[in-house]
Length: 244
Image (tube, rainbow, N blue to C red):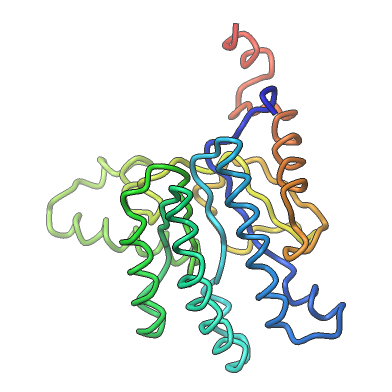
């Protein structure tokens, strides 16, 4: 464990809940319910090994196009999970945050989410961020709109707009970019998740479905990350020379 390079920030696309349930002949929502245990285990092991930021893709903007009964069940499950898990998060010094178009959620969901965020706001351990009603294209569009409004108002000159300025308007402005992005279920795409932030992230695609994802799987992901050389456009020789 001590020999592994521990990412400061891990982001996970929690994929495969529906397929997990279908394999067992169950309704898709049972897959989502069983996925909560995987979340609990992942939060726990991230705290144990020293990960500082964990971001989970919990509900995408595209998920709103799912059947109404599934969306209703997901909203109910989200409220139930927030209420049930918040005391445990607080006990383990985990700070809860959320990113995305949160105004699109029903009021009862928004209230419980905000209460949980406020309740854990002073915790100084792992920062757990839920990406809810999130889409990277939406996020970048909103950033461009906000910067444009400032430019029109004369508050910023076009020539002063750079990557640092844009990052200040992203929903993730208060955290570092993820060094490692994991997507379970074997699918190998980012699905509109942290496209800007993940420009230099290491990508890892285990075949395990999310409800079956456990501590061993996360450790394997970190071990794989540890073997990779992150060059950021430089040569391997340059990176090794800088480490001397």
